Image 1 (tube, helix red, strand yellow):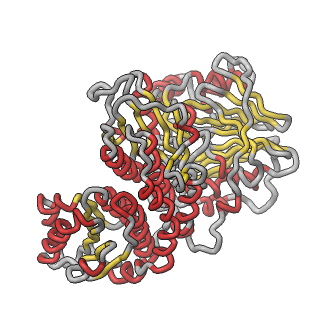
Image 2 (cartoon, helix red, strand yellow; image 1 turned 135 degrees about the vertical axis):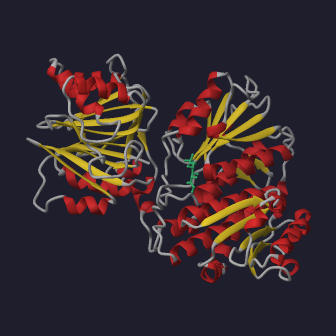
Length: 598
Ligand code: F6R
């Protein structure tokens, strides 16, 4: 979802830093892009489409100026177009603004500004900001004051940055949308996310809600809502910029699927002692669960949370899972004893943040399970557990999902009332990386994808722990192939969806673990009777191959760990179908890495 980059420095031309930054933010998902570079005048370039389209709009001759801002837009107000792309300017063209988030009162502000004679060019909510700045300047405010006064009129969520002609200062502010400052040797950066400038510096300051930043080549000054200077803590990010390259893979998604053994090793490191059969998550040392656990999450993270809730229930902990957008503290039993766990790889998802904030307000304890150090979820929750997957550039979540599952498996042990070491489970967790590697080395998913690339639709079924696998298999298939795919609890198939099953709709059945296998095989027979080809993801091929047309084999790892393996096979199938179809795999349409609107 929308991304911001800003730069002000001494040696480097701003345009190169901004364009590199925009390329690094592409993974967030966007539909248009633009930059503004401040020199003696303000040069603004913007285009609908990819960053490469913006590149062609920028003249070859040197764009002077060592300060500027850039933006990748994911449309909310007005369709993708050159005009609606950011930056937006005022009537004079002296100030340019980029913004992420939603300005809820923009209609009122726009009417007021239009009545005062301002002309608007775009459909966006953002455009009110440069015009508000223009008004404040006309009333005698300094640039910094004008920026502050404009921002203080906004209601809603925003990360916003502005530059002025003839000024090497970048002004920025945030409220409920991420913004991080980077401190380099030859300049200062600001961005929605660290990968935008990680190639230049790993020293960062996270802006908090309500804070403003003034960034120029001599340094950064952060102030609070009242204008008082705030002491900031500089953190060092441990992500290696090398991690963010494709390392020879055609797509980040494929690279990240292959990184899952490493990601899981990192997630387990120093948390699991196999000899003693114990799990210790140092970040959670002071977490004491007293009552029930509620998970809130969206999309892929919701599927991980379904898995986590089931694990906890099995440990005797009352646990429920809610779509964050549906979580309503007014109608649910949430109180001081409830632990609300937000599962969110980005740590910025607006729906999840809203749910966590609401839970906090009614006195629940909150825990963020996230990949992003310093993200809003990590900073605002009472507790945080990092999944340590490393940067995930492909917009579709893959390795973060596996890492979430493993982190949840550990969390289920930490929160269990019975802390008797489960040596067998811990051993299985430890063997996951090697087993995933085996799947990656031996998978026949590509051939199956080739066989069914022309299917009308894809269905995924599973039971128990395999239900979230089926849901996630379908989500991954639809988001990167743009083809119809649905996941069901296998038993539900006969209650309606069976009407959709034909010879042209392959059914992927996840049949692992002994207790559920027989019943899922019953469902396989139902779809076969309607002529549907069946692909079984299974750890016992000899039992299933008499019913299935194809087998995707996974090593048997017990009911709680095998689902993590099954999902890898389904990720590969989706990847190869999308690849056959020539889809934009790393940046699928209409999907954003960090969904910062509700
Ligand atoms: C799917 C995907 C989305 C996210 C969802 C939540 O591949 O990436 O469904 O899982 O937007 O995002 P996070 O985990 O950042 O809260």
